[in-house]
Amino acid sequence: MTLSTSTQILRSADTSAPILGILADRWSPRSYNTAAVIPEETLTAVLEAARWSPSASNSQPWRFIVGRRGTPTFDAIAANLMGFNQAWAPNASVLIVNVAETTDPDGNARPWAAYDLGQAVAHLSVQAQHEGLHLHQLGGIVAEGLRDAFDIDANFTALTVTALGVLDTPEALGVDALIEREIAPRERLALADILLVNE
Ligand SMILES: Cc1cc2nc3c(=O)[nH]c(=O)nc-3n(C[C@H](O)[C@H](O)[C@H](O)COP(=O)(O)O)c2cc1C
Image (cartoon, rainbow, N blue to C red; front, side, top):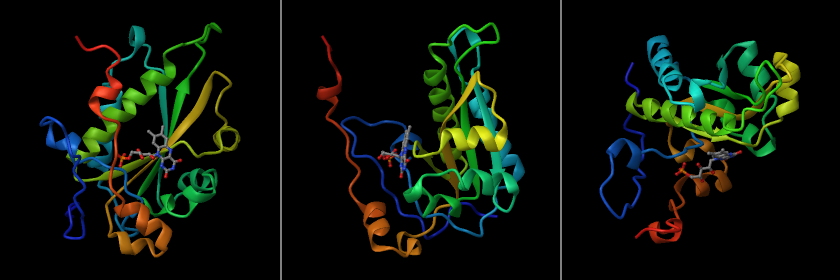
């Protein structure tokens, strides 16, 4: 199966210096091909990229709940997305709950757990882009609903969900407000505005 299709739109970043194409070309679509199935070896590679992310003291405080479309796991994740996200994210091929181990087994806080989980998802996102997939991270989730649905221990917290799939056209979203967001210019603060010190 070809993951890159002629329906793809390129929304490369307008960078102030050349960066890796895989980073410049990554963006967060909401339109996914509802029939696409991600090959198992591709999905494994994407998850493996997260596994090899660095973390504080190699604590690896990340866990993932992976639901393929058509499974009860996928449906339970979709049911715990906040309103707007429910309108589009279930079109993705896979929904992944990103879980942080915020407290270690001895009851000590893991202060970098969220940082480490985010970095693991960043690695996953780069691998996904390499595989010709797209993804969209979601903070708009019902974390306690996910805890109940998947019996997540008190030491762990669901922080985000990742919608992973194959890009479809903006028009496939069907709703004008969503289509406008899909094609809106991508914006960032200027590089000078994020460098607090740069001498
Ligand atoms: C932690 C996090 C939470 C996000 N939550 C949502 C969300 O709930 N719904 C949504 O549509 N997009 C969400 N996004 C996507 C961001 O809005 C998007 O990454 C940002 O606008 C930059 O766009 P780009 O990824 O296309 O460059 C989230 C992204 C991150 C990293």
